[in-house]
Amino acid sequence: QFDNNNFRGTEIPASYGNFSQLAKISLRNCSLQGEIPDFSRIPNLLYLDLSWNQLSGSIPSHRLSHNMTTIDLSDNQLNGSIPENFSDLPSLQKLSLENNFLTGSVPAIWWNISFSTRARLKL
Image (cartoon, rainbow, N blue to C red; front, side, top):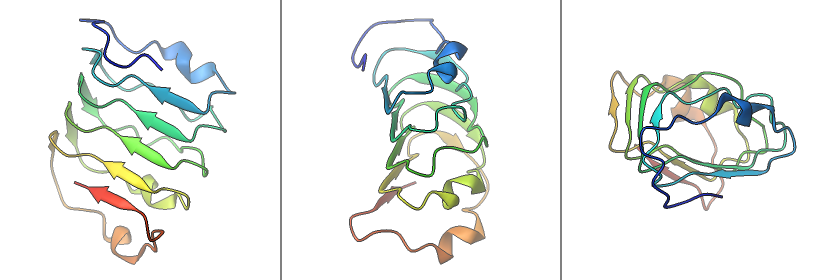
């Protein structure tokens, strides 16, 4: 966890995707730039918070851990559409994508998802 640091102009190292035992990645409010790397090779990842940065590009459609409970990509400069793969995360309790430059519609499959009673979806 490296929240609230000034890594201005720094990208998230692609090597983070190789730390297969990580359960939590929190780089909130670190002035990070660039694209979101591939985290699909982290099978135990439960929590991903990259909010309040200047990340750009589209949201990766790589398959994430089925155990993922939290994804917060809010308050960045992400564009494109919302990937359908987020709908295949049965343990997901929080998904925050607000305050980006996302376009298109919410994938139709999302309207058939049974979230847990504590789930929060912020688009």
